[in-house]
Amino acid sequence: MGVDLTRRLAVAIGMLVALALPAAAATCERVEHDGQGYVLCEVPAAQEPALRLWQDGPDGAPLRNFANVRRLLTDGEALAFAMNAGMFHSDYRAVGLLVIDGTELSPLVTGGSNDNFGMLPNGVFCTGGERPFRVIESRSFADTRPDCRLATQSGPMLVIDGELHPRFLVDSNSRYIRNGVGVSPDGQTAWFAISNRPVTFHEFGRFFRDGLGVRDALYFDGSISRLYAPQVNRADFGRSMGPIIGLVGQPE
Image (cartoon, rainbow, N blue to C red):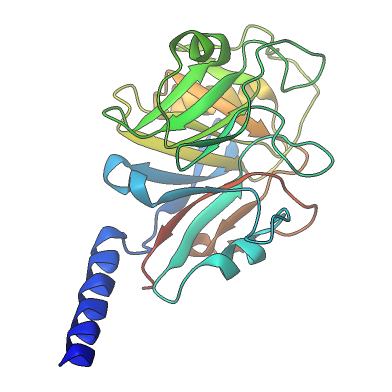
């Protein structure tokens, strides 16, 4: 009788976990804007709890790649998509703020610097709460200190309150494969994007602002931008990454 009850509880818990996770459906698609190609992954508010942020494995060592992230998942989970989620030090730890499941692992940085991260204004991508998704300028974040289930800081901001970052140049010759995140004006949708070919900051920012109607968007990185998205048959490899963000769902 006790064994039977234990089995029933295990089955019930498994069903609840399955119901809490979205199916690993086609959340990503290939799109174009102003002659440039991108892969765009959309996460609606209902799937915010299934969004995860990783840095280290159970042994405390940096994960560094998508294969190691996938090894952390249980039999009832599948990785719908993932990408690098901000800049990192030589030990693969985050440069700025990193919050995972409400725990701060790395502090906020508000000072400027000569690298992309410190090209102020920079910002924080924050999830959780009544407004599921937010991109907040770093100094505003320091003033308000909103609660975040997940948070990652990077820079520069691509779009700030509907305007492109003031240092972006139309005729720039700095081109990289770039990735980042933007949120809908109502905070109910997050869009994660990566360019197929090298693009300028100005082109990437316009994709979010003009192509998606985003009022706030954040740059994640350029030279090491990577994407795992089986829906579009993409699994990038190469240089190791620091923080990684992705959507976890049920196997299809």
